[in-house]
Image 1: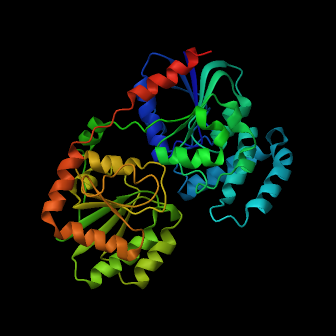
Image 2: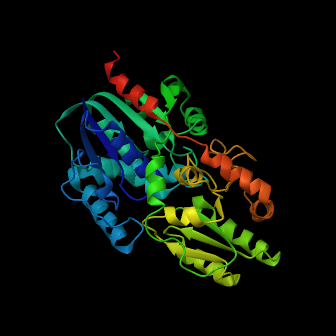
Image 3: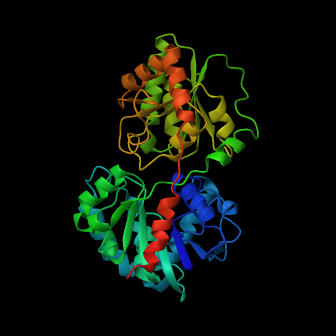
Length: 400
């Protein structure tokens, strides 16, 4: 079978890591091509060797770095003038900017995806299956510029909160034979926007290699400081979605209550400067630590006392799945995407997304040894297996 996967970047994030696991699962049984729309991402060397990468060159700098942002701007400028993409899409971008400017979750960068897609390299090959593995650019590219017998699109985020809309998408989802969402809640938000596609929308859970996670947890070092209190960890990019501003206020409450805790964040992103200022203003330099980008976060997960994922919204967090795989006690905000991964009080705790809600949940778990033990034991019993979903996707090609 000739299969094409298209993704926006191959940076270190949940969807990209899930794609790598899917490519591994497909193995050598098919002819697989991969096209990375922005020609960028630090995970490029993790792509299985049997996958044919269509890009001539991949910039390995993360999009969160200065060098990575420079590449992204250069790439976007180049695509703008390829095939007159900017002129073709200017009315579209202006119209949507005006229409969506007052929307709560509007993300201006989403306006550029169609221009980037239209100015991208195109390939003459006919595929049995083409997979748009992310919203936005990858979806637009596969819908409009790929020749394939069957097409599927993946949705990894709460669609409206991710800053997408029907006007941005035009009618591109009509071009797909199947739409896969990573959770039931993501399916619900997508089909609320696109009720006419409910019959072709299914859940396809992220693939997680639990054996690899356990092996990686034994490699390298975790925490190197001499802190003797309770270590809390969060893994994720420094973005507004992840709710770190609320977490910092929660740490301030916990400090005032006399708890000896230190909260670490493994990740980098555009919010670093404002988070550092907030930490400094509250005098929490010893209680809230930004570790930056960590190539292997698993030793940290293995060593922490508590994993907290207090995000504003999620599609389905791979970081939570990784934490549970390593037997962590997990606290997550009671928000979309998190609710499906945590059985409250059984293998994790769901909390209100507020400084008081997070602080109270952390204090409760750290002070209740029996609850802590129960959460960890039940987390270790969880098994993830999405191979049936992979078979269903491949079987789609054989359907008339």
